[in-house]
Amino acid sequence: MINIKEMMIENSIPMKITIIGTGYVGLVSGACFAELGNEVMCLDINPKIISQLKKAKVSFFEPDLQKLVQKNIKKKTLKFTTSYATGCKNNIFFICVDTPDNGFGSPDLKSLNSVLRMLQKKITRDAVLVLKSTLPLGTNNRIAKSMSKHFLLKNIIVDVCSNPEFLKEGSAIKDFMQPDRIILGTPSESSKALLTKLYAPLKSKSTQLFHMSVESAELTKYASNAFLATKISFMNEVALIAEKSGGNIHEVREGMGADRRIGPDFLNAGLGFGGSCFPKDMKALINFEKKNKIKNSIIENALKINQNQVKLFIKKIRSTFGSNLKDKSFVIWGLSFKPNTDDTRDSVAIELIKLIAPSVKSLYLFDPKVKKDSLSKLKKYPNITFLNSQYENFNLANGLIICTEWNDFKDPKINKLAKLQDRVIFDGRNILDSQLMNENNFSYIGIGL
Ligand code: UGA
Image 1 (cartoon, rainbow, N blue to C red):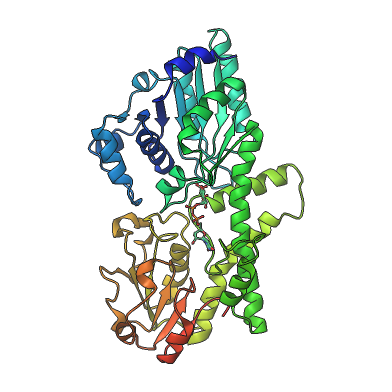
Image 2 (tube, protein in one colour):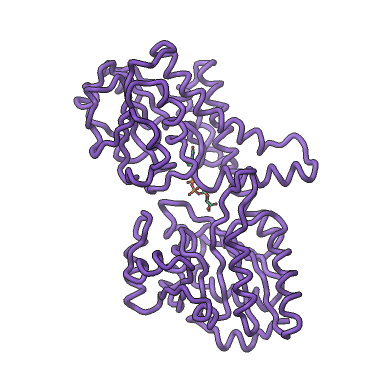
């Protein structure tokens, strides 16, 4: 067993932690652990990112993150390095590297494997390795086996733990500081005690701490994301039924959500889910099910419903104008996969744009945060223009298509919308008041209404 006494003495609060990977999860976790009073070293092999972070410059948008980084750099609780020698002066490691889809429905473990190789070279004493990256089921155990084989001869014990993150982009700091739950999958009493101590400041009436096996922790993460995504697809299916039966999805959602067993969250019908997590995690679970011959997958169908959602929406656009859109132009509001982020990974908006750009005259795109430079994937469409302000070019467009539910879009100026040539609004997120739109002589097309 790991020498817990020594580790506890050395790592009494404030603890000395190394976070590996300064992407979204790593940087938020690092800044928040530092804010809780720990001494955090963030390690990343990308020298450009680290040199920017040393100047407190965060390369992506997440509310309040830049301020938190700045504050903790000043307090000297948050430091950055590209050096494993420096990072390995500590003996608690959080691995937060990205595991993007490899194109075949499985997470790409290249970054993770190179981190593990470096740690095997550089760790010289007992250590706790905490995996925050979302990894295919069984990966934590495989890592534990390979670590123990590697370190056995050196008489070093490395505990491999799973501590999945449940941060939502756009509210990540709040999610870290006031989580619903903290999941700790630990292989020994020693690492369990250490991580319990580290997370103690976050325990409160509304935050539960769950101890479990490493396997259960891995699956809790996947199952949570797949369940939330399935809730969304379920509502999108109900929205289709509402359209055929005359129901209104807003009313149905309120009625359903009031049942505490169902709950009001993640019941918004719309263009469906995107982002770097839900689709990737569902694909990984579906892969696992296939390999293990688990049939009749709800998760697989939930993903299929989601993939079809944007196509159904485009059908609505086509049937409004007749199938030929060649001389039609649209303003598109919202490019990020959800509000309060500039992240366009797996964004439904981008998918919609790619699908309709080849068959329309012009598309005018606006997003409050997404920068034109980050959208090289749209460069090949000559008929796309990026707008600098929300109401530009309305007089040149036949209709407006809303793809992301930014607050800025929820209460639009009617006199500006009225410049649309055909006064048609396709609301892919159901954020506008349909009655108000109809009263003002717009054709308003939402989902499930
Ligand atoms: C999601 C989970 O919510 C986090 O708990 C998890 O930690 C994270 O994935 C992850 O695995 O790292 P995130 O991808 O940031 O977080 O975004 P969500 O807020 O969950 O939204 C996902 C997508 O669902 C968005 O495209 C959003 O527009 C869509 N959505 C959400 C709906 O279509 N309807 C809803 O009712 C809610």
